[in-house]
Image 1 (cartoon, rainbow, N blue to C red):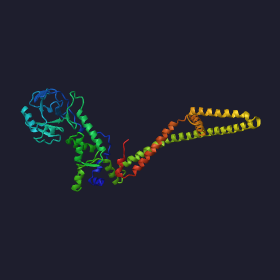
Image 2 (cartoon, one colour):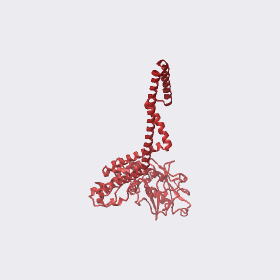
Image 3 (cartoon, helix red, strand yellow):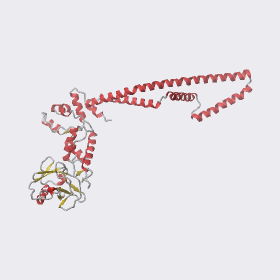
Image 4 (cartoon, one colour):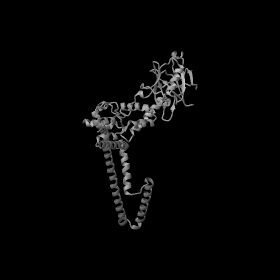
Length: 434
């Protein structure tokens, strides 16, 4: 079990407080500040007063510019041999091709400034770069330039996955930071939807490269993701596991950190974070249900009373109508056989039947339904009920909405109960943010 292995390593206590939160901001160290861009000439060596707002100090780094017009690079350095650079009136501008080697650039700098005895190019971590390294490889990440006793930070061009770009002329928009954030957001979404729960570091770097993040920065992104709990990567934790297991764990990137935390908590006999979230969600749903049930029950009871009253009044009307029909039949029989004769009553019965036919057609025109006892009953019942609803200020739409809400809460509670029956290590897979 991964959780047991992490317990033996002693790394889980250090990360349990880092329960994953997908909305936590990434460290600002992942986004490098950039200098503003000003127009420059294409001369190989020159002096400019506007190129690069930074000087390589701790506040703002220099910037290696990528000139899209001719595909060359430009870098302005404050050389001590230049009498203007020390007072901030100008900087030496170097133009070079991406294929230029580090050794050629160092020679060019020393040629322009004889006081530059010690010129080195290092990585961000201070590791010297090999002299034969081309700038096409170097500019994939920020680096340092050492001029005698000065260490100047240099920001590489923006890498978007397809090409290098530079800042706009006015410098009002930090395109490098925006490009980095966009790439990191896309990578984060890919990791969240990745079908695997564990990959190795090489595969993670490949994913980062597919999203426009250079390999040198992929390690920093991985470390930042681990710090905020988006992934787990235990590459620098000392342990006492066998060498093979240790190397396997160090090279692994766990894309489902919630699963690891759940297994670890469960192995300690504690409530796993995912289970706790399910329980809290169910308690919240039960509280919401308890808050709306009194109003729901009151409206439901009132509706039942009004419907029953409408049914009773409609039934009385039906009974009276039936009695009227029986009485009319008796009256016609008495008039035919006692008071008058059939010769007199025959036209009366004919016109009575014809009148009923006319009334039936009028009924169909008014209600678009057949003149049947069931339809007549429903028509009278609906009119009686609507009148009672209006008189009692009862809102049936409000009751329907409450019933739908109650049914939805019951479904959610049943769904959570079903998910809680799943194995602990899989419960996080069913956890959805709302």
